[in-house]
Length: 353
Image (cartoon, rainbow, N blue to C red; front, side, top):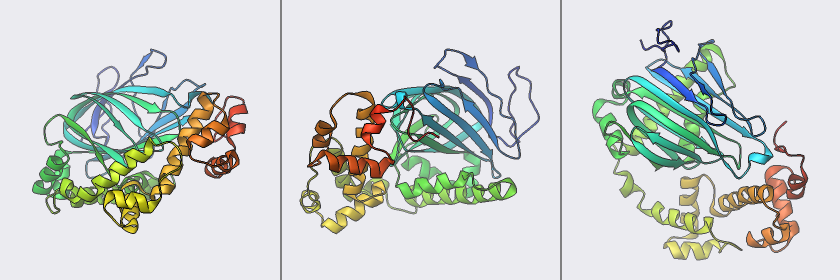
């Protein structure tokens, strides 16, 4: 059984946690704190000491059976943080043995400065971070343009081999390019798979039922990874040859100003039918092309409204709206308030209670 190490270095009562030591260096105020998580009905929570004027957040851990640990980080930002990259923590984790981890993000992008191995990585909706190491040291920053959360699953190499089989486990890590020790990589992951992991740490259940539900969904997520990335399937690169053209369209539209091209013209550029293109795009990004890009543009517009004095009429034109009122209507439909009310607000996130 693994155990935590207390701040003094003396072992505490043994717990099911998969790691042995967690240090947090909170960079917002320059103070250092070593966090010791104490189990409370199988569930633990540690607040992020984010500056109150910027927002709030917390990290919760859910130790499971089968040598697995789930964690969830929640970030809630106020208006003045929008459009900025906020440093939330520096963490160091030492594992009992080489371990595999998968981390997914929702709502906004997460930036990791990894030290083992050294790497600067960005992941967010539509992508996931995968790690294979026995020691973790990372500085985490969050794009505060929107509220966000991360959900991660970690387990030892031994347990991963027992759950998937040794050959499948090795193939999974090799395809994800995390077979070396240590290694870390970011890969595209369909939103439906990310949601599968997110559902594993649902706040809607408590007690033993929460543990059982989390175990089942976590194992299901690992089985999905094995199917998509393991030896039982063709290589990920080969299987995503057509989505590569979809990603090119996504990247082009993400930086395009003005009115979006028609679906038919985009399909001709990709060499696909309009129906095929929309289906492939939805499988990759979780929504049809125009719905996804429109939502992305509106999130960018919200950050621009908060951080600049650009006239709404100019912003609407850049986003491709024929009239500013159409932009205001779409903005209200997305966020529940108008861009004008956000700009006139008293310095707090309209989404906050």
